[in-house]
Image 1 (cartoon, rainbow, N blue to C red):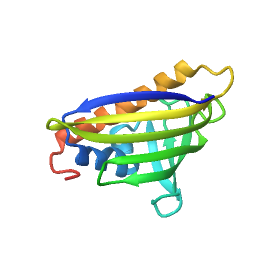
Image 2 (cartoon, rainbow, N blue to C red):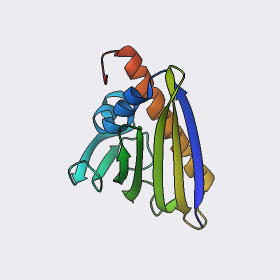
Image 3 (spheres, one colour):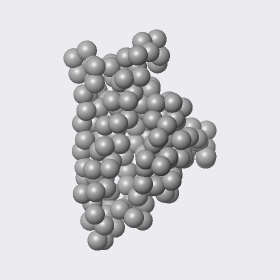
Length: 157
């Protein structure tokens, strides 16, 4: 039986700029602004497009050493992406499968970032703990990018 979790965050950054920083270039930006959580990131399979697999290598602040995600869908114009966890992270611990759908939409002069996580929990796993971990990570990514972009007004324009 699958479960769904939705998390929304508003930022003062326009949607296209936030999408470029928080999604498209996250593999380069994360180690700079969240080094305690993301040590490095790299594309380990493919050319970065649909079907490619990206690995995030986590620091000691995270409960897992790495996570690999496959890019399933990307629409840069509409600031939307879907990816599936294929290895590491909570796979086999909290969930048997997980798909992230992130869309960043204009909201006033800023944006609304929405993440929908659809997952099949491991029987007996603490789904509430997993959901809090994911919500916290999403909030940290978006707010970390917001702070970086406010401090660097020429970045990701």
